Length: 246
Image (cartoon, rainbow, N blue to C red):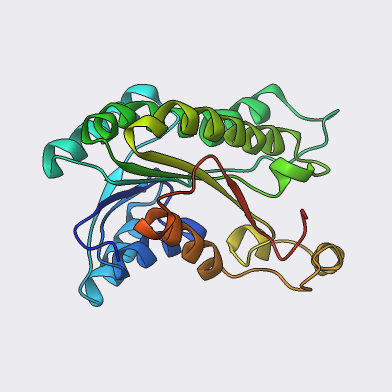
């Protein structure tokens, strides 16, 4: 489905990003596995992809740094002469109640989750405009739609990603570039495994399907949006959340 395509997945060394990278590679794409902190984890993803005959390479970059993001994109274009798919997945949480939230907690989350998404989209857009093709998929969150107690920074960043997605979709559509967002709900990852049993129970009650989602369920949606099957879909926010935000 994606044979010969060049894909960049940010924050791909673990969790949802890792599964997205693996799924795109299984469909035939070369995957640039971006990481910031753990080279070891990124290399594990590479080895897993290579094990089933896929193609991938690790690229270190702090996407919140404008120049670093520019260099990452430039390196990829130099190596492959094109980039077909961008998945902006890199994200962090620094949860706290609004009244107690420190300025740096707000700034760090906005910088990675929102500015990092902008940085990669901006730097990749020139190449995609030149190609007259491209798929950009931004990972937002159900929290960016509904809000969530103790996550003012995270919710603001993910709501911002939705606005950025819609604006870019309008700007880039005339050149055949689609821009969409996927909004996961509660997904089984390292991030949710630290939740207490009481919090998990309460969260599950809010989900009509009555369970947390799986990383594969997010990756499958991203893979669909990255494929030719989604050529007439742009500017959309697709919730994969068991019905939480309907």
